[in-house]
Image 1: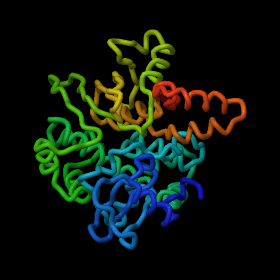
Image 2: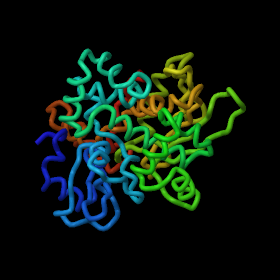
Image 3: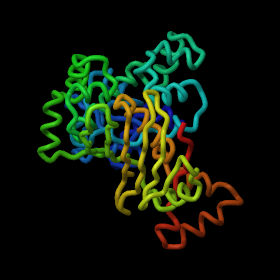
Length: 342
């Protein structure tokens, strides 16, 4: 069975949940009937009984089925499925555009127009594969962005709602309460009390009309040899657009609401995230900026699957075996393949 339909294989998904393998985070989520929450496959909580497990292809599908996000494993703070960055069909293109904030800016009709499909046809195609339509996917993304900003910044509630893509404070409050079973104020208070999160950040409070600066952590699937990845980016930097400063890549971006600057920096060897500092003209561009940084670094890739695929090639197999036998983590750890910013 293909990975896009992995959630349909109940036995395989249950086995992954019992093994708590983090490689499968982002491939599917697990809804637990006895608690009403949904989790990532590697959730450290006690494994529920198999008969209480339900599997969904996306967080949006689980939310649509009435489940709320687990506060312990934070299933929305995981790398996404690597499929959407390599496939060229209409569903994959729709997912990428939703991540870029198109639905928040132009609505589902604008998304459909960009793809050359009717709204009804696009809804049917996306729902058939992801268990939720484009509007639900965008809603799940807004909820994730809201949690990130509430827990990691000092922005006002109104600014958080705008940055996450909500059209009103009321929809912001209702969505956060429904998805996380907590009010925005409770999420912020819980984070200050020492909660954990996979992609927390900090914010610098700028003077009025000055760019907003946000520092975030972007999770990825291990293993990833970040020095090799960033070494490639440094070697291929474009003068005038890319700058290598004190171990960080600084890149100018053109986002829907105006120019922005992204500063990308690798974490420590045992970290499973990359640090990014964003200077945004408009905080409403946050989702688009994060999506482009993730796509550029290929952070949703499955490095082990990449290595296995390369090992199946007769010409490359000897090199893969040589690196695997070298005993050096840096030499044998697969790297991601940098993409493009737009």
